[in-house]
Image (cartoon, rainbow, N blue to C red; front, side, top):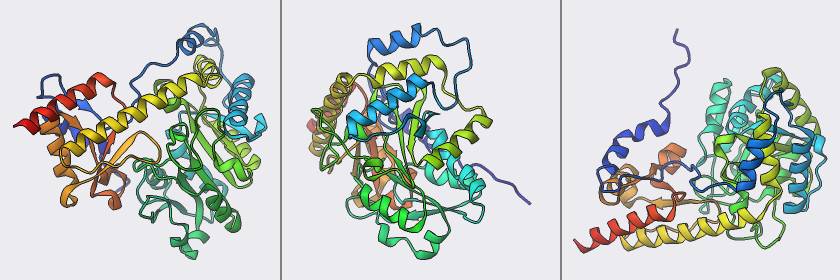
Length: 380
């Protein structure tokens, strides 16, 4: 009898594409992964270096100052009051996303299903698989928003949780969070809202800019819901692994207690850096301007090459339809002609197999290279 065999990690499959793109003068322009490339604020680095908190064990739930900083951010950015005891720290958010099905299964052993968008971050499905649960993909509509009406009563009855992701990765869709929260409350299914790109929302009601409050799954109350947040994208701190979750008091308490026993904790200096980052919005507005300008620029470059590259409603990814639905063909073309490494849409579920995702995170000088190569390609 064969045990679990982990599937290939999706991005490991891009090695030949990287090698192809690297043949260009100036090297590969890697747009395959959403790794921030811009610097965090100096005051955040100063806080990281000078906290003096590296000597002791940090609280798993986060220090009191860290949780107060998170609660203050929710108040300022969303107009939502969250008691600091109803939120907790996590080591980035990927470990939380992958670990939640296992912990929820222990809490509700009669349930066995994780619901998630059919085009989405692969860790939602992998978390279910690693927990020995059913991973059930939920249809999305033409704007890549989750279609709650497509969930069968049978799957809802077995559901440990429903994941939503707004703005969505990879396609930038904006779900109706009010409807998602109501759907979960009516059925007793926790709704877990991955909102790590919320500061980079470009259209519609959730837009965050110029001091306007935004929308979160918590905007209509905390019962039965969790907001999952990260400073990786907001503040260019992916390497520090600073995340947090907030919402339903009973669920937050349960997860906090489980995670204490697991020894999961953000290092004290990283928490100090997180406090500094959460206290400053100016650097986020600067980053918003950078990402939106880069999205527009790369969209124009691709369209000059004959490709449709619509701007997303949120996030910093271009979700590019592949000619004739051949995503690997487009990925290869981009590497050969422009030296760009993209991710075939199948990485984000079979329903995305006819698109390519481009993470528009590289600095402007790298986009200069892409533009020069595009002009050369067009002239020949």
